[in-house]
Each structure stands twice: as C-alpha cells, then as structure tokens.
Length: 103
Image (cartoon, rainbow, N blue to C red; front, side):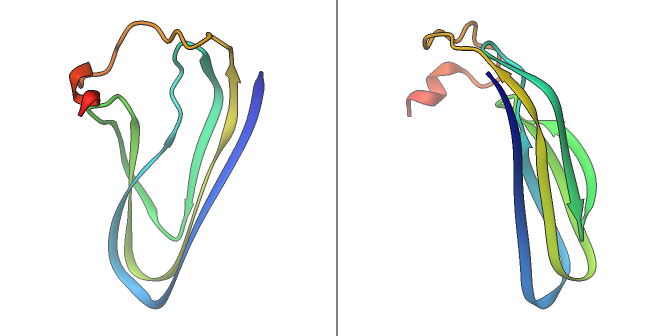
C-alpha cells in the first residue's frame, strides 16, 4: 500500500522566544515492510542545525530558534510504501539491546 503523509506542527507563543532547541523525530525509516519513497521536513521560524541517528536508530533533526520568534511551523511529509509481513519484522538492527524494550 502506498501512503502519502503530511504532518504539521505549529507553535505560537504569547511572548517572543529568544532562544530554543528542539529535537525532531519525524523521519520514518525504510525497514522490512516499509520503504520510504520520499520524505522532507521543513521548518519556518527556526533553523535546521544538524541531523543524526540516535541510539535506537531513529533519524533526529536538531532545530534552533535564535531571536524574537512568536511562531514556529514544522511540516513533515512524504510517501511511504508498506507491505503486510503478518507481524514478522526481521533481524534486530538498532544499537540498543532488545532487553531494553522489556522494561
């Protein structure tokens, strides 16, 4: 099944924000049962600083606000192809050990 996804987050502040950092985890990964065809994350009112993969294998984007901002708009959108694997995911590939998820 091919899915087109668009997610918008808007922050509006009563007082101007002088400085802020925020981590965004809005990027899906290609994995068994899911293939990312295209994906884009855009930010208005803030600056995309750096992107990295966290210890769980998730894509993280760090954004900052520096100056007088009264609103921030984040849009994550793209296209994903999914396939029914009947619950069988495949080999574990993240840095975190599986026992961590049992807590």
